[in-house]
Length: 126
Image 1 (cartoon, rainbow, N blue to C red):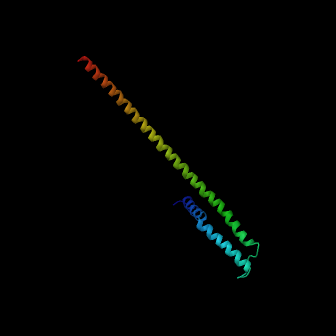
Image 2: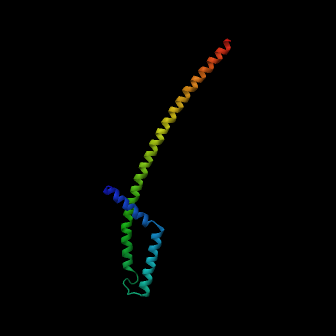
């Protein structure tokens, strides 16, 4: 696997995790727990209200998540463009085959019409 492919694979995995309900629920529970522990002081107040350390962590997460999500979207857009191009080529080939089949059917219809006229001419002679 090339480095670019490996990076894209890792990016997609990260985006799949970040964009899941499991992650959102877990993050919400951690934030709630963080707030409760720091307000009630079960443990020493390591991040008293207004939770500046928590804000720092969330800001760092957002700072890294944004570009990672954009990289994954760019990769997906490139894959979509490639798939659309392949669909276009398949459709173009199908159109060519249909046109060829229509030409063959038209040629056969002309031959049938000629044969029918010959039969009518033979019938009229008899």
